[in-house]
Amino acid sequence: MAAASAIARTDTSAGAQAVALAVYVVLGALGPGTPVVLYFALRERSKHILDDLKAWMEQHNTAIMAVICLLFAAKLVGNAVSDLSS
Image (cartoon, rainbow, N blue to C red):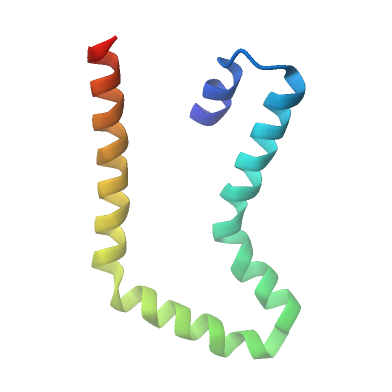
């Protein structure tokens, strides 16, 4: 919703807004879509790849969550600084 709102607030044409929204949707679908596509494309061969990915993510869960939290924090601080300076 935030992306759609931000795109709608821009002073660009409807076509450019549609392209921006399409790019956002494609990028957003990559995370959950890649393992699904991998599973359907490789069937049984994907089991080893996906199991290794799952094990890696379980092992590095703390670091992954720390990076995600830092990204959210940076975004919030950036918005706050932007709002205070305007």
